[in-house]
Length: 193
Image 1 (cartoon, rainbow, N blue to C red):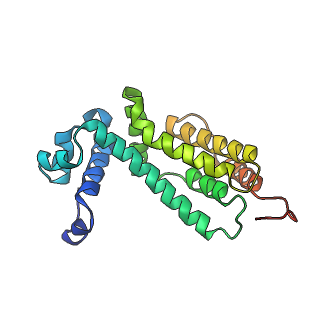
Image 2: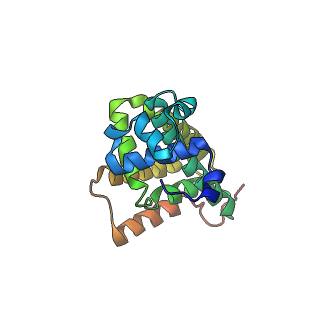
Image 3: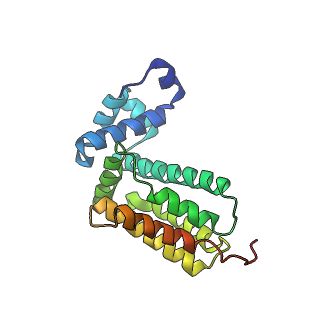
């Protein structure tokens, strides 16, 4: 992991370890994710790593949690920037989750998906977050059924992309997203909270 001394100081050891774990997974796959590999990648002792993550499972769970936190943060920014309150969270969820992943981060998503196959509990932090998001969608001042349909469509697009199954591309993709966005907006003239 290449960091200059000035930005290495600004990144916590825990974040450095998570960055290192993601780098190992992106480069070599989840099967090569070992505590030793992560410690070496981060430039810390194995004891230093064990202070933060007592097992590989704790490390994978933390990666999943951090992915969910990043998504949550980007959604919060989108909600704050949306001038229309009704459906703002649904639009933020849709916008954030349908953005193409950073090519350097895409292997992390794929590797986490593979890790889940070995231990479904790795997905628990994301399951909890999705339950929270579903509650927010249902309380987003638009029809909760519509909000849920939007979420399920977005989830399908995201999982389809991860599994590399055919999903709409180009103009069709844009039209699908625009249709989903239009579903999150109250009809004109309708009272809004």
